[in-house]
Image (cartoon, rainbow, N blue to C red; front, side, top):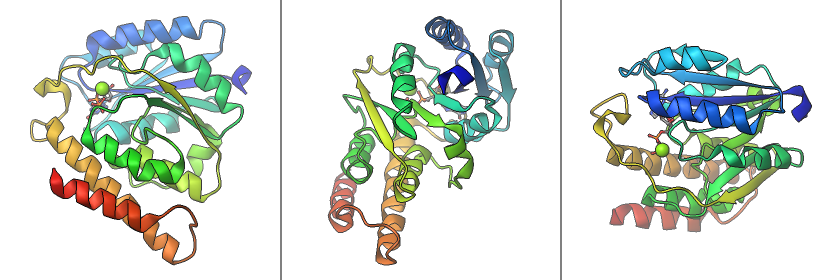
Length: 247
Ligand SMILES: Nc1nc2c(ncn2[C@@H]2O[C@H](COP(=O)(O)OP(=O)(O)O)[C@@H](O)[C@H]2O)c(=O)[nH]1
Ligand SMILES: [Mg+2]
């Protein structure tokens, strides 16, 4: 599969310096493998797109919609049968790409999970949805996908698109694999990271929790209708709700 090529998809918001480092690291890791690098930028004010246009194979700007819509957009542009999604801020070390490529031979989706989850919303997702799908870091967007898998899915595309994708994949009986890595320290959260000053990082955590609850809730409904037969949903939702009410 890998001999047919790998599409690397990343999204950027004010990553002018990091995108240079990321592209150089990815090119180095994939120097013997046919690949393309796709950058989806939401018109970052720091001019990331000009740098990306010079260094990436595909660099596009689009209206401001956030990271996960950007990933979906970039995945649709991918020309190779294997897609790797990776953050541009260097928190996902491209050194793990070969392992993802190796593992995708055995699975339909492989998630690179962090061994330490810094946000409470990520821990909640891991302890609930994670148990459901057998992945410890459901909100990690550092992943390998078979392109044929991605094109079949209809997704809500919120902040937890990654988790939603895993639930649907599990329901469809796709094979989900995982590799684990120790993440570097999380970077600071400057105000200019996100496209909207009204969407600071705290809100991102709340969005993640609310989307996690939404996905659990829809999954529980699907179970009632007999379309999904996994795990103890009530316990998951209870755990999730009690933790949310504490935050
Ligand atoms: N296109 C686009 N990319 C974004 C947006 N917000 C974040 N990103 C990118 O998505 C990746 C992960 O974002 P980050 O803020 O680090 O998320 P975190 O690691 O979950 O805190 C980085 O490459 C960001 O530059 C956005 O609104 N639009
Ligand atoms: Mg980050």
